[in-house]
Length: 203
Image (tube, rainbow, N blue to C red; front, side):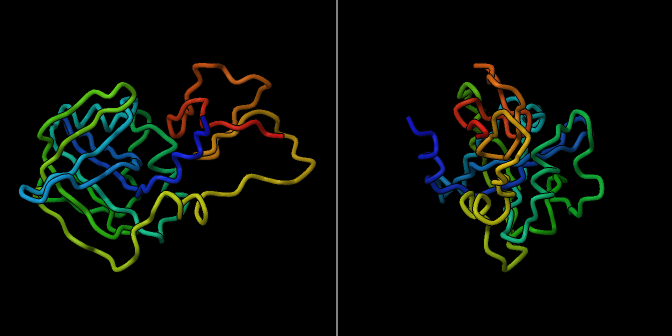
């Protein structure tokens, strides 16, 4: 199976955020889809290893910031390549609060949604949340960023220098490099949480 075929599916890129026990946290996700109009409901998929997923299960509320094409790679590093267990993700990041007092990004964002979880479903590696939208607004006229736009124009391209000294495996999703001849069969990317099927050997 060619795992790169999944990159051809249509995805956006978002920051899902919540608050529980006075702890705010957010993470990068790529699965948010409207599923009903009356009532207005969306589904949100989040990797279970993310602290944000754990906090949403506790709080039952979540905000979604729809990232725009202006979002720099550093924003993805900030919200996607580090854990909220070790850092406060909303320090030095411009944000405002929804009516439920959840953070949403005010820069590099085209819209936001304020939601209450209706149901949650355990999908193995991810939790799927069915959420009712309680509020939403458009905050920028910039185009929303797609997964393909991110890969083509935002994510740094791998080095193609013939004398590249790093040997190992590179995550095709986020660019993380595992140094070593063999990639452990149960290895999970520490940045984006993808498995070995999304790694390629550095030649």
